[in-house]
Image 1 (cartoon, rainbow, N blue to C red):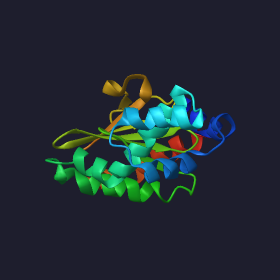
Image 2: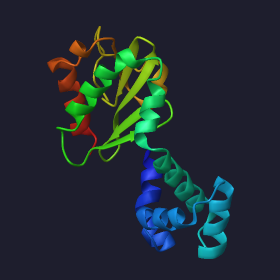
Image 3: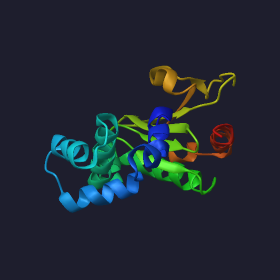
Length: 180
């Protein structure tokens, strides 16, 4: 989740009178078929601004789709990579209760106060793990961000579960520690 979106979610109760979870409950009761119908409802019936209404409906729909569905879709035809993904998630879940795992259409963001790693099945045989490790020099394994651009500062290419080793976990922990 990017910083602007997190700020919007944090400001939602003050700006709209309800938290994101409260808005999601209201939308579930109505079960709109189209995105635009949900946005129109929030704007006309609750006086929510367009930006907040659009965000609420988008996040509500993403939840309805289900995080497992998003991950399953990412790894369809790439099932060989699932043990790597599962090992990464297992480790990330040991870092602290303040970690949020947010699957998207093509990747999974792992967030503390901000995103600190990004897990992306890059090919049928490789996961690219993006890091936010400002001012950390690159190595043969810890490369520059490559296709991640400014979303990440570094990347590690993973093709085997064994590569989720002590060295990689150290970098993940470092990125976690810096994401406060």
